[in-house]
Amino acid sequence: MLLYQQIEKNKRKSVLIVIFFILFILFLGSFLTYALEGDWLTGAIISSVVALIYVAIVLSQSNRIVMSMNRAQEIKSKSDHPFLWNTVEGLSLAGRIPMPKVFLIHDPSPNAFAAGLNPENASVAVTTGLMDRLNREEIEAVIAHEIAHVKNYDVRLATIAVALVSAISLISHFGSRLLFYGRRGRGNQQAAFLLIAFVLLLVAPFVALFIQLALSRNREYLADADGAALCRNPGALASALKKITSNPNPVEVASDATASLYIADPLKKKVSSWFSTHPPPDQRVERLLRM
Image 1 (tube, rainbow, N blue to C red):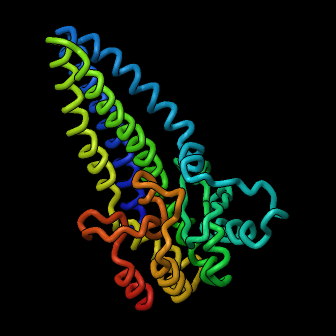
Image 2: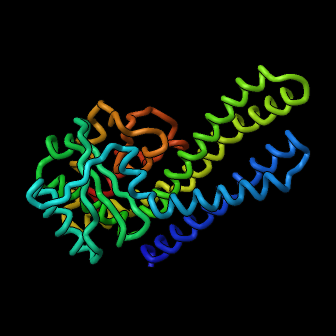
């Protein structure tokens, strides 16, 4: 029952994050027009329309957006990379889900992630470093972990969060531009722009952090366990995690927005466990070795 409860929880969280994002944009639009014109209704209407259009685009194009952000190149034929293709295909059959699209990221740091809104529209991406540095059993175990994310609907929650966090970072950038413009204004206009910019710069990073924290690190433990069951080799996944996390080189194309998608922190940041996107590697390895 734990697995089915997690799937339902992920679906509910996805809806809540989208609603929260729309309300946040609604607040910003209302605040903007009220500060400039004394009219909050116009801003509320405009921002609602913009937010709904953006969310619709995110829901329809999120997979492509995430893969583009990570410069992942699709493998369109089995002949292009037979072992990787066959591994994804075989584990998808074992997990009883449609085969996800397969992508390759040209980066020497070993890592992998999955994205998409559902098992019917999912993708799995691995770095060239993963293919070069891990053995066959370890690669299979990593892909099994990502297939588990797809099966458990972790990818829907994580993909939506990444897309919306990216939008919020743009809002923060917009705030900094307003701050620069506001300094050149005069009188009430200058004061309004400075106030709006200050609010944007102050609030946007916290909203992005809130969305990221909605991604429970418990999902990684669950995907480890489910992935180990799929490939029937928990030791291989434990060994793969050791190799991935011990490599000091970050994935160059990864960013703060997409870090939570990867099987292990691609940025190699040393941060407090309270703000880490992944559980401690040694705890994950210990759990796997006890299976």
